[in-house]
Length: 367
Image (cartoon, rainbow, N blue to C red; front, side):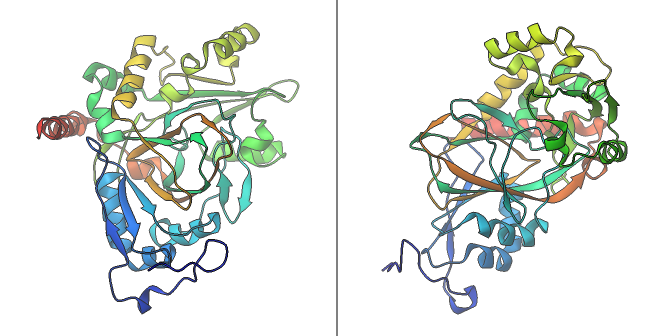
């Protein structure tokens, strides 16, 4: 029997005092590899204490599925740092940001503060950077009245769906990301880099391999090229890991895209733009093909109050549905990785894609 104390909370007991099983592992959604659900046997279980005790089990689930939904625990945003530490260390500060967020303290932020009626397309957090978090943790305090779920897609399976010719050019050239921080348009460079010191920004860019150009009037233009694929440091699997479709203006709402192109006729002046690493334009057909691969693998996680969603940032892409009503979801990031640690071997990419494709086809054919 589950007796509650106070306004919807029960005292937590240390895991050592509970010799019986603390959680039960469920299944993944039909036809999907993620997320796998881990449910508390009752809401007195401290999720962070359980994660610290069963770190190996939790890490194995993340490696296999890419995302783990912790359900039935009573959590707050303040639980996220304790949950992340055994898996990825202390929460990371959000630098070189591309979306607005509100800092809640302790390395915890609100999830992207975009208007509720906007879709946030599937993406891997900070995949445009030379260093990025390996693990994300989302916590839902208030689910939306309608919508507001978090789509997920297995990036191994996304890669396997892409045509070899498309993958080959991306692998050969990489992806070039161009950003222009116009005063009063989108995020300022001060917000993106967390400082109002131009010299500090210039130093940060130099360390990260980012070309930074200051234009008259205080406008900052940056350019960086990153690989399109990554190799998971523990599983050795190759994944589609870039912002080509996410940052390209073709993915914007048509009215917004038209307004931006009218204001900034030169593509390099757009707030965000993407090309192949050699500077060549990415064909619209390739972008549509990539978005179709994401869509084919996407499944939506509907939130419940107290849910925590752990996401391996290499293995799984995430997004956001539009919603109505209040929605309060927090996020923290940990486990800093750099491109050297996840560099994919071009010679074995095709073999890995074929194995994943065959596994997926076998799963779809199973009764």
